[in-house]
Image (tube, rainbow, N blue to C red):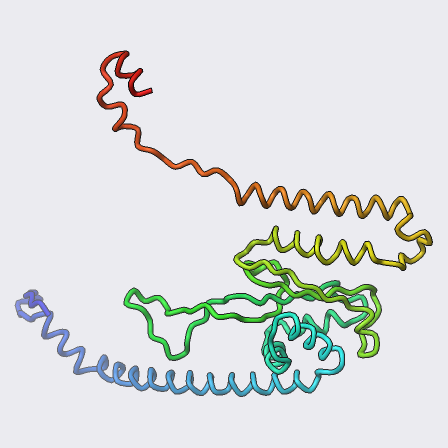
Length: 273
């Protein structure tokens, strides 16, 4: 500590002396417990992590006990569509923090749709160290997760379940009341994914549909024909939009100074042209 002399009533003393007195006094006694407090905090943090892990395990087992025929139907469809084992899908679902959306989907007059994304997600390895700049060493890893569809960027595959009525979904009616489908939008190519789904799956299915409910004429009905024409037209719009985006013209910025710096007279301009 820099020593500076201060005169108080004729006596001299230094800031270093004052600091030394303070350190040998109460300041030292209050500083000592701080180290033990940090250690205690670290211990508590470790215990808290263990407790959270224990609670997470209990939650998973409680959810596993709730799985019935309805969940098995969802799991089997996801496993077939995404090429994962049913055990992998089950573990993913019961570990997801949005697991309650499944129950809301099954409930009477519940959610109309249930979405799953399967795509690369940045995940930090637990044993990885930070980079020199302090950022985490994150690696992309394929992951299946439940989503509302509005909070995460969509860059991979979307698997969806749609309800056909407001009835409660049971193990006996799940195959009739719930439809399953997928969008493959790898690299975020959503237009191509929707176009393929509509043109290769939905339109052929609709045109082969025999039962149109109360419409007895089926495909001969003018409203049905108008509807199918509208879907075909929409697919054409998607296709042209995708092609326009893929074949867009990008103008490269060119440094024209090298062409105009030596232009002195009209003949130079003609030559440059």
